[in-house]
Image 1 (cartoon, one colour):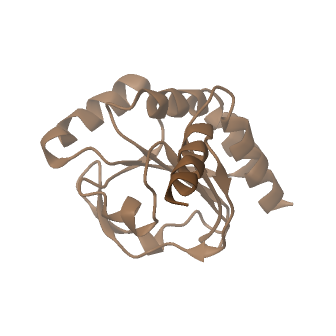
Image 2: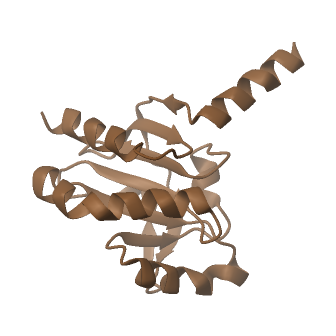
Length: 164
């Protein structure tokens, strides 16, 4: 039985399986890339949906995903008003690498720092990239693990469903 469970979990993780849930964001205090404290249960987008994308500077799939979204982010914002919070899980000794990566990549996201992975763990995320979509009230309505080229279109489709 344990072997079957492990196999199923590996399959889920390897395929980037998506999960849907309606839950509130947990309350964890993070810092912005500029050092300001932010409580995660207060994240919002002025009554519009928002996306939280967990990444690390060393995670190639994470960076590819954020780069791909960056290419269409302005269009997404014009169409839906969506906002993206990119949450770095780089540990404290590597946190100095986050701002240079964000700047050199031209990412226009609100960047938060989660060096102890408290927020990620409070959400039950085991791996990155990990993306959640929240409705206008901050309820988690969609979760996704992993990244394959083109997967960002699924994110905007979820946001479009929320604004209908």
